[in-house]
Image (cartoon, rainbow, N blue to C red; front, side, top):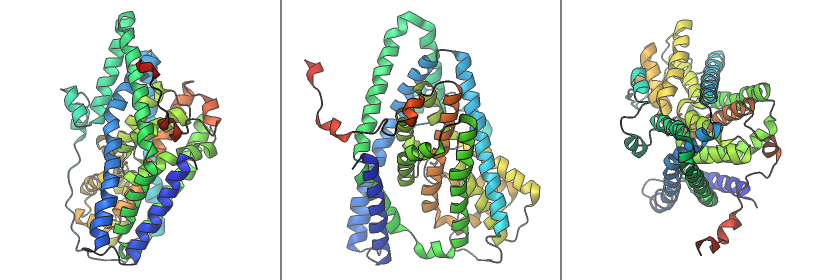
Length: 433
Ligand code: ASP
């Protein structure tokens, strides 16, 4: 079995075991299974794996961006790649939420529900746009790295790359070293991915065991519409955009993105998935590192189609529950706010709810209404994160293709970039001598 199939198997087994614990009542609070297996073993294995992925994000983005900028070698091209990806990211997000609002409004979810919730939710403020812009330039790059802030890290790495290019011949050794460092980081991604089948099993089994199934049934309308629009966006809108703008085959794309989607689904974090997304687009799809090293971390931070869809559906749902008529202006505000909020918030678990509270505040919906959907949000977060990273990969492919920075043979080769786990068993030590 190859690694992707093993991961898929781990995921299926995780769903089965988790649901079994859940439905059989074995996971009741205080039980042996709950304390030692779900919150002990599964939790620890899952967390270790997510930590390992996060550990790679900063050095990987740093080195691959330096190589990327030096690879592009031209500031004009760099600007073009930046603006193209920005526009595409914003456009796809805006389309996503507009479709979400339309479908949710047509379906009438939440009408007549009039349910009072005892779960309370107090919204946190998303950072104001001015702060987001100001913070793009770090006062201290080490600080930005230490706290894993993507936009300032991207900014610093790009300026560094440009300066290396400007120094020219004398800096050749630095470029070579960055390339070696980048290759080493990619190997680390490979090593960590080799244990993914077990980790994905643990992460998913825990999520499923903890799932509030009765809540899921209560909120069936919301969940069905939300998942429906997420699938519509992934399989129809994004694939249409990919085909029209790049001519690439959606079938091949969907096959190759599956691995990254599973990681996103298991971790519920686009940021933690960056190493896998970057590896997928560069090694499996043939996107040149000069484009992917920028578009992937950039997208993980500013592009959240799935999250925007959740916000659209949740807004309509809660407006209906509370009998509030937002009107066309209200909904346009929702679209604008969601797109803007996605720029300033990082792709980490649960951040969508913070963005939602910002949107609600703007249009005057009761923030505590978010409490209604809180119980099912983890599962929804997992699904929407898979859509978020798919959007990042679509835009990366389109931009790379339009810049002539895509190796079409790699894209079409089904085996390109597949991880060979046996490689780790035979490490060549001859170079040490
Ligand atoms: N977890 C999502 C992501 O990382 C963001 C969210 O919707 O909460 O992309």
